[in-house]
Image (cartoon, rainbow over all chains, first blue to last red):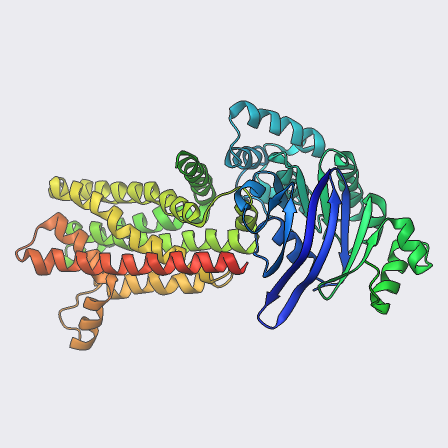
Length: 244
Length: 250
């Protein structure tokens, strides 16, 4: 089943076109990585799909719901982890999860189940009574990503989830994300090419708001003649030809 | 409607925890005004009427409310700039629910401030206890709305680094232009007009005159209250507009 169907999506800010005529289909349960240099339009695309920003043209369907007209329905089935660590700083880890679960409309029993699920998925049990502000950067980031799972979304947007993490913490988060594969549709943006290589079912490469390439890693290697995502990415973005 | 109320309550609880778990906010919202109330009363109340408890206690309540602007503004600025608010929008929470939750979070805090400073005042001067004090405590919730609105407005406009400077304008304004720390009889006509036109002196007068009673109800109570309410309405309209547009921009 198609989870996300994007047709001619466009976003303009005054005289800047952030996303230009984007067309893309993502299947249910797929982990799709959006790559691109800064300002390529990745975050804007994600924000439009999560109904946080209005598109100026085109449309996208998230499980059949239009981002232009069915915003409330989409909000019930998606969640997002932003680039920035976004947690309630003076609340404990446990309180953060409870707060987010209750805000998502969960009752007490559902909140308890969500806590258990998130503790297990992210290993947060050992720090559950610590205030978020007193956690290390790595743990805060983990919590920030974990909160996006509390609402049990059908579509999860991860905007540079491992930004600023050391290599060990990054690998740990990769494991967590890998364990989520197939359970929900995940759209991930990242600047770490090895992350896209390790996690993605398919990859999309954007430049100046346009999608240059969509396909699997193997298709990317074949198109560029390279043997790793980083070299292939550099080749494609430098060349600028559209293969999507 | 029920879902919306439930979300406001959940957000409010979180905001109360965020403010009360910051020891600095407690020090400025409760500790500093309490210290000043006791200190100024004991040092100066025999020298000048300005610092008799019937003027000092309601003045301290209005002064302490100016710090609400700082802490509510700080909370909003941090929430906005850390993308915390942006992510909460995905949970279906609406702008007006956030605004209500910020305002509701500090109302109980200011209620406690008001009761505490009046009771301490009453212990120092028992003539303060009475219906006037009860009414002033209730009215302090109205004057608090002005500072809450300013906090929401400034928090929506600034970031966590600049909010301190911006909010200090309100705190300084409340200190210097309320007329509670020094006699204003000998001040120039120009500055007196400014004080009458701005909300700071009027907020203080509303509380002081509620405690002490008035001879000219309109000029001593109704007019200051109208001025405070007018500023409060304008501030809240501006705050809602700026908050919503900033969130859209984000």
